[in-house]
Image (cartoon, rainbow over all chains, first blue to last red):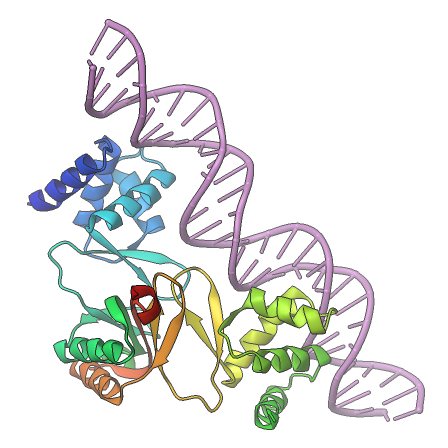
Length: 143
Length: 143
DNA sequence: ATATAATTGAAAATCATTTTCAATAATATA
DNA sequence: TATATTATTGAAAATGATTTTCAATTATAT
């Protein structure tokens, strides 16, 4: 499993004239093995557990490569910490963020997407991507 | 003019047991006099021009108060810089951000808002506010 | 094998924002 | 009005996430 993601990465590395290194493989491995939205710091700690030799900076640099290659997406909830989510084979989605417990839900409504395109067009704007974050209280926290 | 905003601020200050200071009035004055979405740094420079005595930190602190009082809204475009926009008497709006020139358009579509509420409800989520940013190329940059 | 150029990791730098703290100023109260 | 109380100020230092620097190391091409 995860074969495809490694292939994508390998292709990306090749096409850019970059090099395959154990660190890059290790970081990708750990990133793919967690389903959470990890910050660079969290990821670094996870990587460190299994591959103690890997440095902080290399994690940052590698996550940038993964973003470029389309394997990960960067999410910014406005708390000053950049988080990463799996992107390969994942559909676009918006985020419902609970301001009480900090957890979030991924959700999507095709009608919203369509309307956004309409809104953009109305203003002569050619959209490439968007971010929709809905803040509020989740079911659990409301109880 | 701007009477109302000063009233709101005065009321906020009073209700919180805070104090009226010339610096706070001056910063609010400058903030209201610019229609741009200013960063704290930009605002500091503007304030400095007219009221040289005001310090950097006071601008930051005052903007926080203005946010709390509902007079300004904080916007985070994900570039690491927090910007402020007028909020009093302004309707909620989304942002169309041009990734080429950096300019943005404020826009709104009530249907989108309604659908967002539906999406939230579907997930047992009670929304309080949201941020929608559409990135792309503006009319001018496409020419 | 060797040369070349990319990559690494540690430490230092950056940059926006926040905290600290002593001096000052606004308000409440005598 | 004078005074006590407590909030506010501004400068400098601290913070915290991310980036850069740089010499040593390592992957790949020849």
